[in-house]
Image 1: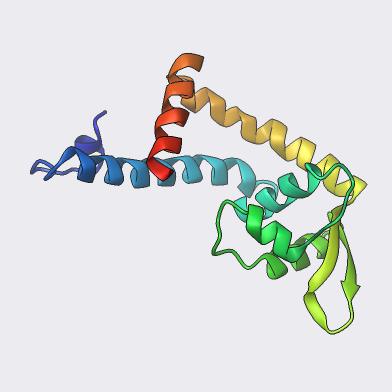
Image 2 (image 1 turned 45 degrees about the vertical axis):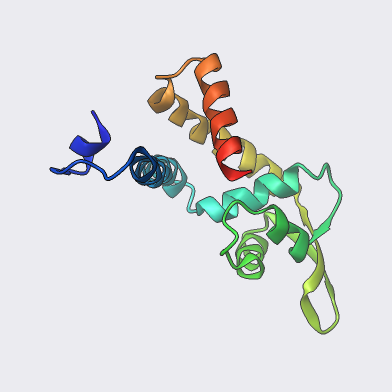
Length: 150
């Protein structure tokens, strides 16, 4: 189904640029909806999932809240609050510096690693919804998106 049909637009876009921007935003929301469908059953947000993935990529090396913020996909997320929620669930540990919540070392726990593995297996089910492109097309799309941002 075309973008125009999806959003029930009756008049044409002013330009391909405008259509592309709307299409990227619409597709982003579509992907988030699909991801949230999988994450809902684990009682975790996409931002919390992102934090766990960042920490897991550290290979047992702790990082600070500020380093997490630098690597977040959603730069508007409150990383301190996200870490607090993950800490309460036992998925991360933190070594707090006195007087500064952001100056603490954060690390994924074994429970967090196990949980992340389970969630990742489930969320990878989204690939079924996105298997409309082959590897070469995904590579081209990634290249075009990188070019757009840089």
